[in-house]
Length: 559
Image (cartoon, rainbow, N blue to C red; front, side):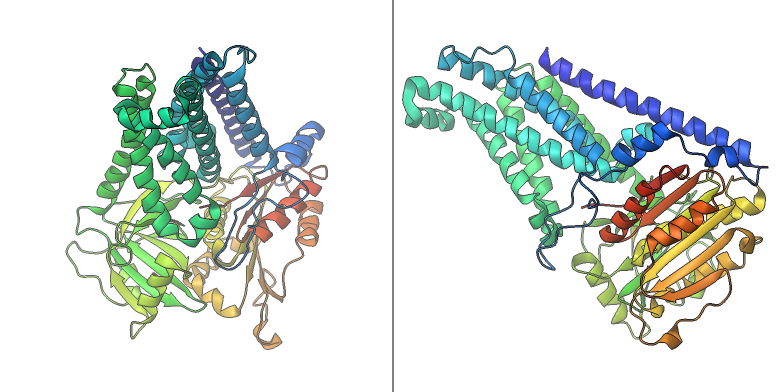
C-alpha cells in the first residue's frame, strides 16, 4: 500500500507540472498571436504582484541569497558541485521526508526487536525497488517527462543523483534491518555467515554493495576529476546492482519483481532509442562527414554534414560520438548553427571548410572548448594538423530539447559567457528572422557576450556575418561585446551603434535596468555561461520582478 501511495505522490506531482506546462504554453501562444501587430505590448509588460513574488522567492530563488550554479572548486581538478535551487530543495526534502515517513509510520518501536526490524526491512526494501522506477526514468536522455512537463534534463539529472542516494540509503537500511533481526537470535557472526551461504541473501548483499559504491564514485569530486572513467564504472555498477536485485527477488518470487521489470524496460527503451537515433541520423546517403577546425583561444569548430535532413530548432543539443577520439564516449553539445547545402552522394569530404558548406545537405556546427579528456584530445588533434583542420568520423545523436522558444516575448535579452554563445546565436537568428517575417512578438533582441580576448570572436564570425546581413536586423537587434582581458585598448572598437564593444565585464544590474525601463511586452532574460555569470543574472532578474513582467531562462548542463 505504501509503495502505491509513493507512486501516487509522484503521479500527482507530474500531473500538476503537466497542467502548469500546458497553461504556460497556452499563455505564450495567446501572447504571441495577440502581439503580432502590437508594437507596444503594454498589457503584457505589467507584472503580477503575486506571480512576481512567487518567481522571486520560489521559482528562481537559490537556497540562500545568490549562489546556485557557481561550482565549489577546491582546485582546478577537484569540484564538489553546485547547490540546488530553492524549489528543487523543497521537492528533495519533501520527497525524502515522505520516504522516511512511509518507512517508520505505524511501527510500534517499543515492541520486540525482531518484529520491529522485520517491518523496517520489508518497507525499506519495497520502497528501494519502487524508487528505482523514477531513478532510471530520470537518468534517460529520452525521458518523455522532459517534453511533457517542461523540466530540463539538467534538473532531472540533479533529481536522479539525489534519488539514487535515497535508494542507496533504503537498501542499506534494508540490509541492516535484516542483519539486526538475524543477529538477535544467531549473533552477528551467524548473521554474516548466513549472508554468504544463501544465494538469495548473497545476491541482495551484492546489489546493496554495488549501490553504495555507485553513490561514492558518483560524488562530484570524483565525477568531475575522472568523468570518462566514472561513466563506464557507473554503468557497470548499475548493471551489477540490477542483476543482484533480480536474483535476490526472483529466487524467492517476491512481489517487488514486477517493479524491477519496469526498471529494466525503461533502461532498455532509452538505450534502444539512442541506437535508433544514431542509426537513423547517421546511416545512409554516404553517412555523416565531419570537419574539425582548431580556433584561437583553445576551441574548435565541429561541422557535421548529416546523412539525413534535420529540422533544427533554436536551443537544441546533441550528443557526439567520435570513435577516433574517444571510443564509445558521447558528449552533449549545444547546436550553434544549422544550414542547408548541396553535396552529391558519395563525394569525398573536402579538406576546406568552404567546400564542406558548399554541399547541400543539413550541416550542424558546434563550438567545443578544449579542456581535459575528450575535448582536450579533440582540440589537440585538430591543432596538430598542418592547416589546423581535421577530417574525421562523427555520429550525432539527437536532437534533444533545449531551452524554450522565445517567440512570445516582446523583449529578449541574451547573456552569454565564452562558449555559452552557442546557445544564444540560434535564438538571435530565429528571432531576427521571425521579426522580419512578422511571425513573432519580439521587438527587441539584446545580445550581451563576455569573452576573454577579441580573438574569440572568430568562433562565430561566419555565422554572425550572416545574421548581421539579415533583413531588418538593425530594427530589432543590438549586440554588446565585453572583452575581459584585452591586450590593449586598440583592440576595443565598436563597428556600429548596434554592435558595440567594451573593455572589462558587464554591469548586469545596469544593463538590465536600462532595458526594463524601456521594456516592450513580456521580457525574457536568458543566460548560458559560467556559473558565476548565471548567478549574477539570476539575482538581477529576481531583484526586478516587481518592475516588469520578466521571465528567467537558464541554460545549464551539470555533469
